[in-house]
Image (cartoon, rainbow, N blue to C red; front, side, top):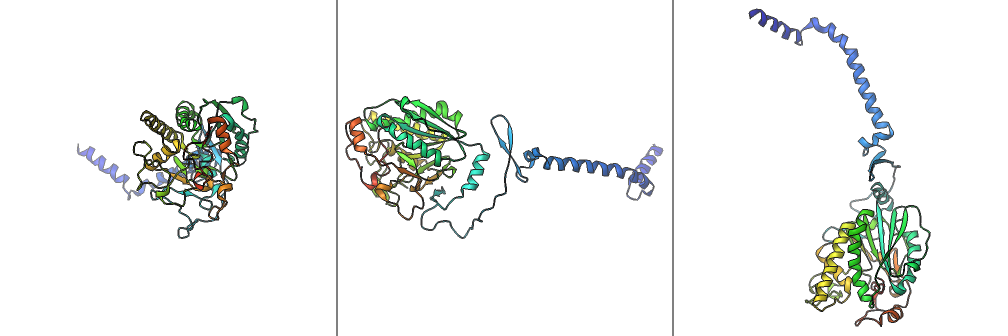
Length: 391
């Protein structure tokens, strides 16, 4: 046993730092170690610099991994130079740009389209634009689609969903790459108010049955409008609403919320953030599905109780957005009537505007006249101007 112990001591002594006799063997190993290290460095360098290296280090190199439905695609990003944002210099001081719940309010001058376009292209975003063209309102569809092709989500994939009772009257409009149109049959109704209310039901059902598989975001718009300037991915958010052009500068007491407690759309006089237009809203497909389903169920409850909200689906939309805060709010740039309201200086751009038309005549010929209490021709009715048959 003593011999064995001695041998162990000798072995440990040979491995100690002071074991000078072992130095020649270390020199023999150094070339092998250096060669192995060089090989590892070469392999790592190849992985980073090769076209596929962006999958590992996309955030550090020029390649960024983008997930498509069945594979990863590497998108090469060009260098982006733009003015540096300044924490002490707000982009706009003449308007509110942030809500109390920290949702941005989108005005011209508050966003950079180049930055946003790259981010949404990396996500392979597809946007659905829904529009209802019922009865005579199909005549507005051509201008709506032509201006959308020019200004709406340029450079991104878009599916136009046209709900109509006259599919043969849908005009043929040249569509750009990655953009297509689907015609969905809708029922005609005797009253334009019924079409307005049934829109929520049809959107909810379509979102559940098809939209979820086809698009990432839904934008719900009125048809008797036209795109007048850029409307892009700056509007996209899980849930967004648009400030009504007739109320964006007025106190909540002036809002035409549903004030009768018997209605599911009822909002007390001392509540309310903004008055949102029913002519332009949207968000992610799941969020829009939840919104439209909730509004439809509330309208069914009202009908069972023999009451109809003062502004139908718009009243229920405002109730929903009061208690389910939107994650982004669009300024009146995205819903305007220039003929009725002019062009105030606070609006640097008019992006989505009402088309000149004779609403009373269209409604009279199709549905027997206007509703009691109509606000056509007033500033308050500007955003409602498109809420008629087919909208």
